Length: 625
Ligand code: B12
Ligand code: SF4
Image (cartoon, rainbow, N blue to C red):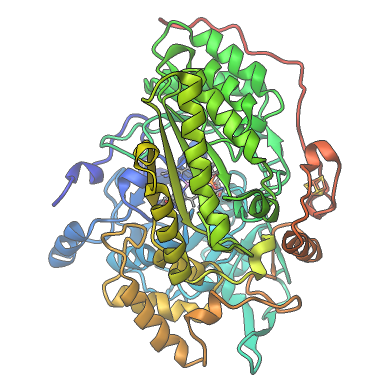
């Protein structure tokens, strides 16, 4: 088998607690290969929070590569955890984190390998409660046949509440069996148990209503939000992978939520309001994390890190603290803003100025108004040029294609922009040795965003636009060779679209694809569009629907959406108005600075945005050189 190291466990900071010492056992799964799943912060946090409880333990499991899966089936070995190599089937709960919907077939594969019935209704008390979490769980309807619960929002507190429920039910002798346990879990804030909600459909295929089937569960399920992040400084002891992984650095989340209002961004919408960690909190997490891991790079993570209200001071103080050491600091992709170059310069005091990443997302100013990510072409060119002038050699620009109202012209402007960036960059840096990489992917409309009603562009449209873009970039070879183009074809995006905005009827498609051999759909070498297309055509025909109905069809204002009974805190009317503003190319500001525009989140949650200035500074720590 390939890379056996990924199943071994025993990483630095991994934990194995004695099974019989605790009441509740959690298996936590990232439904992708170890190299992608191990660095996942969400699961790392829950792993530590649960293991800190004296009455619980948590162990990790990842998607098994097909080579080992074959051997496991041949030898009767079930899906196991990497920590103590215990069978997943024996745990009380199996928590699965979905950052992307393309992980759904891997859930089915893991359940099957574990010997857990695929369908929640076929499970009994001896089987784990299968819990979905992460951003995709904000519309878990496509996987509602396979999961027992979905958790909306932040996990830190809710996993503790769920552990209490399971512990009490076991202690009491499991009264009422599995159904009673699920009913108790359904009464925990943020926990949705799909089997207690019945969906009916109208003649046109749309949802008529979603009604709860018991009156002791909430009619609408709200999300969980950790309001004081400083109280939850996790992971305190980040895991250090044994094998190469996609993210070889330590990450410290500096805030959650985002109020920029980019209309395509599900993460920004569902994680409101903004909650900042204080400078002191971040400073001690960086210090403790480095000591616990030996990492030499720290990423300051969030949805838009340069927007932390004290980022300038934070960057300077961290750079001062680690000056002359081997510790490097970095920010993930940022908005296009000259200030971000200054920040990156500050953070790179210790290291090389290799690459900087900006995310303008839309090719033309017009489309950037539609998506509410306003930056003028001049500012963009100026910012990137400043980066080259400051010694950065490589700039990566992220774009999307297939955005609502987009035309070929909007996408072609990306080529003009890249050419201009290189021309101006060569002039400013006095060097021909600079590169600009354009990275572009198809846009997928997501639930709980203003674009949840939009028609998704077809794979043909995306592929056509990418083709004209490629031709335009290659038109002038003298400049074109300094421009790299990285793109994904339109097909996986269509399937992601089906899974993102799908309803319960899509579950049959997922199951069929998995039965036909589908898994690791996020990997181009495993993804088969034909397999998905055939499964969708055949399974959805029973309902008189097809793939287009779920993807390229524009929804109407009052259509009941599959996730309407799941509450992200945003008002549906506000989302609709924002969708109309998008079509009219009207922008909204960032409510952190321009005042509240009534998206609904703060009043629903009885809270407020939390930003600095806090007046604090980093603790004076002694750094080991
Ligand atoms: C670092 C990162 C990556 C890294 C590392 C991924 C990894 N293994 O973790 C890399 C670069 C590999 C990556 C890849 C991708 N990413 Co990424 N990534 C991020 C980023 C910047 C941080 C994620 C993070 O650590 N968040 C902080 C943690 C604490 O939050 P969390 O994981 O959501 O977990 C909390 C809750 O959701 C909940 N929870 C999570 N799981 C579970 C499970 C249970 C059982 C329970 C109860 C609760 C629970 O509890 C946690 C604690 O509160 C986010 C943006 C962001 N700030 O969130 C994007 C983001 C998650 N990525 C995104 C995307 C699209 C991708 C890719 C699909 C990109 C691509 N086209 O290839 C791939 C998918 C990879 C894969 N196959 O899974 C999107 C998700 C889109 C969406 N659903 O809206 C995001 C939100 C960025 C964005 N704005 O678009 N990514
Ligand atoms: S309720 Fe107002 S202040 Fe709060 S996130 Fe929404 S728009 Fe911003």
